[in-house]
Length: 100
Image (cartoon, rainbow, N blue to C red; front, side):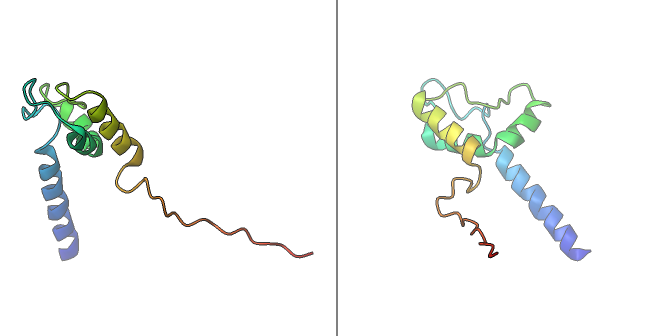
């Protein structure tokens, strides 16, 4: 029971940390647009941003003040790849040969 409580507290702490840097939080402006690294981060926290945006009209899924192509590239790479989803060293399953 104690381990579940600690896990719940850690999960809540991570959730609060993730919501601190979601699109629409006021960090990016036309003078200081979000760059590729912010695009990657916003792609990773997109599920959290989607949920928070249901309750807060200021929060968006996507940062509107961005640098264009490079932000888009980072955002979509993170969405498609997720946390380590673009793993280049995946283990391949070996096919077993059946002998007759």
